[in-house]
Image: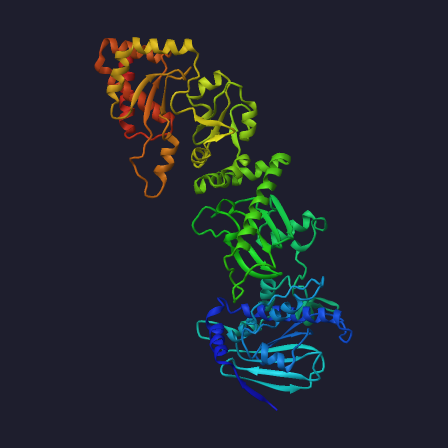
Length: 635
């Protein structure tokens, strides 16, 4: 005889909220019901160990049945089941969590049983009403002489009646809603491929086998060119997550295969990092560094984050709080039983546990990169050429908050070794009396190696680091120094590397040619802040340097930024080699006709701009002046 009951008032309100608001995706219903079935199996398995009256299951399993004729999905488990009282408490009163209550009772007992109860709030069952017009639950507890049927349309009432069900466990039957025009197609959940897809996505690592009868096409006997349909029972989930295995039990081939399948990559990752942390906070993590960066890695559309699992159940595709921006290229997952999930189990509440996991992951990844740098240099170089700019961004970001964490991972191309070097290695090679770590910034190693500013450093055999990424100088400005050695751009300010005799000779020449220098400066007064004779030039005739504030490369980078201020420019200083034949030619022109110096000054300045990679304001005028002076010199 049916026993009709009303949901409690607050339960009605919560049920309505559950069906219409809490869950973002309706497909989540299958995850919740499978998780509940897994909980029921856990409970039975545990109680069977404690109670001799309960016989262990021959096989623990969760079974899914589809009926297109009846438009039903049935989820069956041989777990603990429910008594009539438990049905009323757990299904008649929303948020009366059987799982939570069970765990609270266990907390008072000493046991070593590994029990991963997934449900925490007792509301997951009601997600079934998002896709169902009616739900029937057939259940029997081993502690009850009879089974019961619970039935509801998810509105005002539910009913409970007895059944002759003989075996313990629960059977949930969902009668699907009618399709909605141009909206939800509920009958898609009756397709085998759809159920397989959802199980793989959300419940692949539930510890018990999830089975379903599937249809397959197989060759007919003795007729290899003809096929027939057969049905067979198939296990849909993997059950044991690779990340929960011990490191020694996982081969590199298995890790690579998992990565390629899980993250849709055709190449093996550069590195796989496996973590199994136990303590105040428990979690497993499997992190991969892809060989190639995603094409949109630096676009606004790229979404960083690691996959998030709780006890093997998929929670979130991209948990962005687990990785800092500079590690946005990482792929992988974190699985923890200790995270505080919200009521829908879809998103994570922001708490200290998550922040702690993120902090631990960052340190672990940093240590792994450092180990790779020290022990697998070629592999680290492969990584760095793809993602080195991200580490530099990490140094620069948040006003250098992580500069000490990352500074030893940085590499720069060296003029001395003709290869990439760390800052530590540079320091170890420095002469005892060398004051600075010297660098030069530009667009390519080849271009920087040919710069006139390099001539003095090469002559004195001083190592120079080549900065070719836009972020380099900004990161170094934040870093400021390394092991008490400050950084110095060889294209900024005075280098003070000359001997006293060389300094004295330059000053004497500046005094001798003061008139010519002032004339050149007057000719370029709107373009340069100073014209001076150079101590750094040995073979080249001219170069352009800036003061110690903003460098030319920083000016270029700032100019490319959205909303750039065109007034942010480096101060230009034109340096001329007093020992070059061109300077002697300038002396001759100045002595003959001082007014002609203006044309030569503009040509020298344009030449220096081109060397620095700047565009000329008027290249046609430059070309005409070159031709004009060439004609004059030919007469």
